[in-house]
Image 1 (spheres, rainbow, N blue to C red):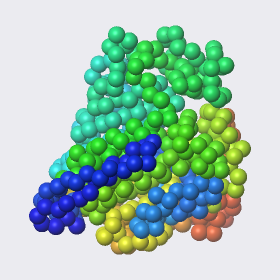
Image 2: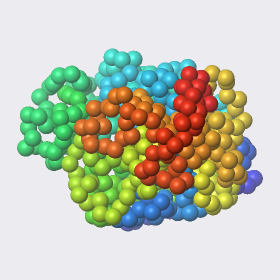
Image 3: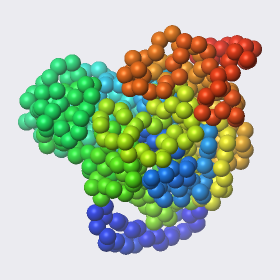
Image 4: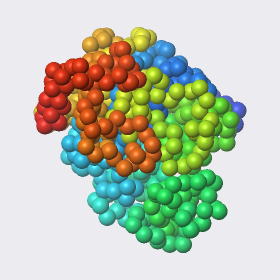
Length: 515
């Protein structure tokens, strides 16, 4: 804890590409808040990271020492979940504390309007009530603007209109245009004489496309990902202009890490909330060359190494500033793993013995367990004792749990699916959730204690069939006892009709009302 009076801390600035270190002495004034109830909060939100993709969760072929360090010194949850098996609904749920289906959240186009509108409660706006400075750095993919966004002018509404004081964004994903950064309300480094035009229906401008110029591609992409080429990679959608503002994928690690560290340094003397949202390990996977060959699994594995390095840089900055013991870190992923997701980067061929989903079935897009069961770690040195927890926990519950911690009352119509689980997240109890809906592509499944119930689905999404993904979309009810069958191989629905009817009713009740 920070003591009364002034303390001296050493700030170590480390270059991404160099080995030199420079020590700078700075004075940190006494913090006047009670950090036992107002810690800094940093959420590391990884993209497409599977339950088994970290060393502390059994990974092979890749090492993740930075994240393993906090996993081994904090709480490593074995039954932690995103709310959905795809990114936009999960991000929506994390920030709002409610299921994405309540606002018809789905995977958004790169030019989609803001999904979270001003006035909607968010983690950021809730923490601002407790005096926090709030920032988001990294992938957004929750929409920007009002539905007719002009990338050459101020872009709003966006994060600043829903509780964030600062934002530095990848507007959607790396595989979608526009391929630019947005800081607060404006595209970074845009030359107004070369305006940006984005169109998801037809070609605009003269940039090469994957379907017209396949010889310019660094690797093959499917039809969906085969439009405008930037940095040798074809993307979803068409984009013209904005040449000076284009990103280089390999720079993401440096750019986003530096922005996160800058935010921390600027706000080290007061409570802050940083939502550090990663592009890794989403496609296209283009880690910086310094990480090339650092795993045995090709670019997907090397992207995991890069992600681990980025996480370690931020944690070590907290330590260098002397505020690590005043900081609650939550590390997790937006959904389960996927190997082929539009680009041929040999992720399947180079997998080896590694199991991205661990012992579970399915992955991203799936109603099976690996769709939402993801690595989940809580780390707060000096407050959280190291342990492994089997409690059923959901990212949606971070909202109500943090509100309890910082003393903010949550309104009846706010964060309606978020359950207050603070003692679980702090390791004081193993009594987690009893029920949890797992959402995927407009369908749901139910966890009830050790049981997993997947209602019959009349329609198997074309996306699942085209990707040849094991998705759990069958035209009959499925029931599994995960305590005996974590891989969901033995359907016991026929032998347990009473449980099936109980769980059907519970699904309908949650969807129609709330938990």
